[in-house]
Image (tube, each protein chain N blue to C red):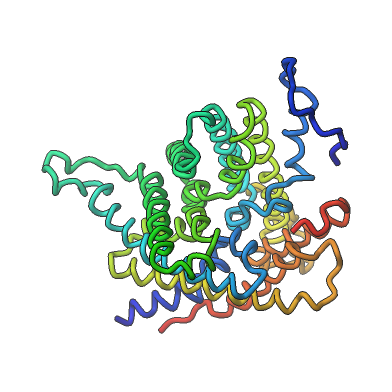
Length: 204
Length: 225
């Protein structure tokens, strides 16, 4: 239990997807101009993250790993399909996002309208695929995968809302013209990353 | 700086030479005026994470150039057959296949680099440059210009990667491509490597400052995003 809590805290603060690995930077910088949209995107990312990463774990364990196919026929026990993981992971994510989009559109049109273009864009958010790939590389078990994906999602949410809040305040400050927009957003992200570095080494 | 030329005529009857002025521009624009990282804001994720040393950055740049060029080519060849509704999935499958090839080649021939790049090779799939160029260019253009556009964008991405990696490796560990550059006597006189350069935020600062410099130099880029 303690180990899981540790993993959770680590995924949010110490190994934040944005500040430690720069995953999902594209949408992080593009959608952080207003708090409201940042909030919506953050929630959508959490949701897709906790849906797809465990799904990819199941695919990896029961279809792709060496010996994973033994449950179909013992002769298949030596088949190692891990090289297909990229294609299957991204297909799962694309499919899941599509389903989520349809469900949200059908049942809560209000939420659908406020999320707008961000839902389909989540497919190509590196943090989602990145979490799946980290799960594969670090060989988490199912519970750890679920906890890790929730932590990563919350980490992304936290980061994007924080940056949006700072950028809303920045509108009133006097920044040199060439530095405005992307340039200053990069530097702020760097400073926030340094602040998050102070979490490193935290153990529960 | 790119030379300002008149917009290309919409209907072009005569066959273009392989390296016509327009094609050269397609190839060169992404290096500065339309750089994928600093102007289009695409593909930042991996640009920051693999730049602690020059060697992985170079390999990564090559991998991305390969994937953008060939996915642009393939999608451009298929552009009339792909139904628009399912194009995202088709694009992702093409990209994922190419990335799998890159990954397997790296694992077979450069295992240490492949370990260092860890998940970032796989993340070329979701690198927005690839997808962005497919959407913005390959779906509407002929195969050859698309191929050049892919190469140009890959190189523009590589340029930033290498600039950042050179700065980080030189100041962070005093080496370039693994060779000692800062001489021993400098260390004896009290020179210390800058530890910040090894940490993730350094890449953000360098790119932020690069954008500042580029936009001061190239005024028309101010306020693009």
